[in-house]
Length: 346
Image (cartoon, rainbow, N blue to C red):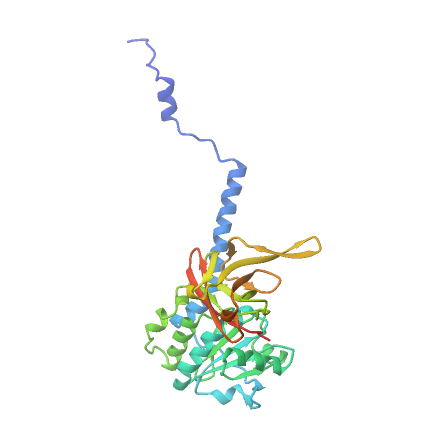
């Protein structure tokens, strides 16, 4: 029997066969927890933002309670109540002239009104403006909005549980039951699909073109824009300089970035730059702006005193009543074309 000791492994072999059992530091554990919470928060935001519209598209959920029979007087002077529209699919849309997302969704609402109205769809715009009826009338006339609109107060808002966020849209079926509620921008393709589904009375055919006809149908990279305006330039010579304004809304699930602007028609000989107004002491100065991030679900309002367009060109190309198509270039969504009308928006 041998008294020899068993052979020993080299140190490098021992180290290879021994797992690292060092526990993660408290800082690393905290970072992992923080990262998890960030992802959970992001997922919750996306679900909260897009689920109401997705539910409207696929018809998820059960019919809710009967909509309150609110009374209102339209801007045309008609005294109505909601039950007058029983038998039709109705969208009640609370909005305001000062609300950028409201202005963004209105052209799509007007299109739905024109296309689906003859099939039994009614769109009611309930303005919560407090400045009087004349300003609302002018606002609608400038944008060619023809669906019924009324100016309402607190009673009508509270009848639907309040409107903490504008716009707020409530979709009501033919029997007067609330089917969907969307707080915030209601994408036109989602609206048309939901309305067609209710017009067909449960399980009707959805028109495929409603899902793909508009660029905003892809919510992962969609930028929606209003038709903006250009301040009429002072007649200072053959070439003039003035400001341009519009509202842009990011419907995507991720931040996009406005990286450039240009005129769509190069024959107009227009120069267009993105500028911003900054304070230099007590003096407001304009300077050329760099790329502007636009977070998901947020609005970028190009307005006097903030980010805006600086437009220069021949005086005859910028006279009141003309329109200039501007290309807004985004890093994710690509080119978005917005028509700007030369004239005072009122």
